[in-house]
Length: 331
Image (tube, rainbow, N blue to C red; front, top):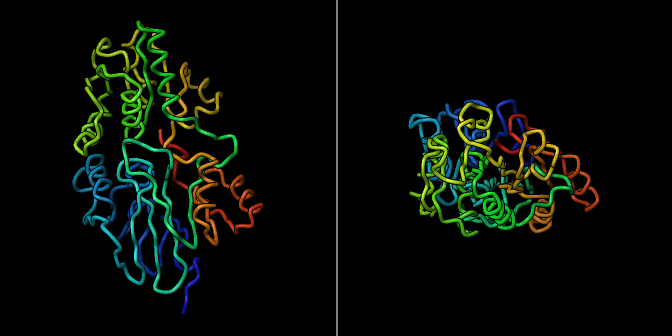
């Protein structure tokens, strides 16, 4: 007997659960078996009995949580049978090791769980891969028409231009430790900045891992000396700590898709907002649905109402899952 999509995957207090496979996807609390889309802390949590993910995501979890973050690890390599479903992992273009997860039941609709994803080319990870599905479970972090992200190289050019205009002022860029920091560094290199870049200590281990994976970040130095480099990267919380006081008259910058909203930049005291996101913007989000042609769209987290309305106009059945516990864009 063919199962309905709602019988295959559904939300629980612990997160999204696949009943015929008896596993959770990006669970919010410790479970017996977890499939993890990527290494951001709102999706990858320690304490599960077993974790299946890409090798890079497993490595990142070990870096962040210690080698004993789970009792058992399984590297996602090709289609894998779990219970009464087959699962496969496909690049999501979000951060290093990020994946979409396709669930194919013995009988019933194919369900694709996007995790967080981005279709803009990113030198730090594999590009997003289109995957045929019947039900598309998508994020909607930037699920409103106002969110139309510029070319990241244009934003990198603005950063380089500001550094040239204010050569005596250090430029401090707030960037999330996994993915965003490395991408900003790679973009700065591509825009012609070849001098050493200073990084906060909280970024070092993940930057080192990206280099080990073959991603060229150029010369990096510790941000312990205020004069070590003109370009300095740090996780956003560092800007609210005494650490930032060592820099004289800095240009404060922040790399995020939310910098489209100028009020957010002003609230943070950001002088140079950089609209650089590792998520799909509105045009990419809607185009992805048109490209995949799913029979249904389910929305995990983000701004559901705008996307629900768009799907209604397009004649595509859609519903919100309203999963709690996933950040709109990790900071």
